[in-house]
Length: 405
Image (cartoon, rainbow, N blue to C red):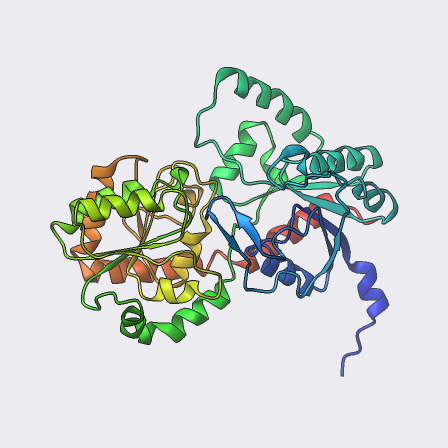
């Protein structure tokens, strides 16, 4: 029997803080996986408890509460927010001076700061710089969107100045790597930590639900003998759901099919009115679906379309691929740089190109064998884009750039 000396093991651990805005359904499983690793002692510092209770989501246009545990399996602390009007989406909406004491007194080996869109994140950056605490930065930005000359000039100055002081960067994908390189971050300071979902959970649900595909469609009164296109997300302008509806209108004239909108938002009435006025058949509005309900929606679908004009990543792509679905995305979707292989498991089209989108949809609607082949490729690709790769990237960064205090 091998006896493990816990004291010796603790000495080898990296003491890592993660500074995050609030508990997020996509991040919680990753924090849990990191905490399982024998060489990482993780504590997550949250700036807000937003999302733990029911709240009004502006994008979905309704009150909601996530139905999965957000705080299980890892250590965490909530930093008091002294803003009298807290807002996770506003720069000064998170004012958490308590982060100073954690950086200065707790002697962490490194602090991982997620993004730079709040005052507290910038405060943590500067305090860490002053105290000589290594900073690991993980953001979602890319270069897929043009900015004005003056805005780009400001970014160029600020990012290049700040990025020089950061120990290393955790990149979520190819376009994110390109972003850091654009602002002169050396390649050796960038470590790939893929933007992931809980693959094991979603693939296990796919295995469970795949034989029940017709049963699930009957539950929602959706025909079982035609291919189903899925849109999953907020019905808001940045997601461009009307583009998909118009493309489907064209494609469905050639190939009988169905379109599901799994989501809610300000454009729902407009989309419903257009469907009714133009007598478009087989369009279904399922409303907002919580995390535990999503597997059924993916399992009864045949392909996913994400037509967004601005999408730093698009984790619905990951989820859909876990269910063996072929993917169609616009060229402004961040996941397109890594998970979308043109003609292999997916198609990419220019954002706003309704005719181009309709053509891509028609290709898949017309060929069940192609859908099956591309779906199989989706599963192969997503199996290599998982928490294991995240942990590997994090450990590589810690070993190379972080010294233990």
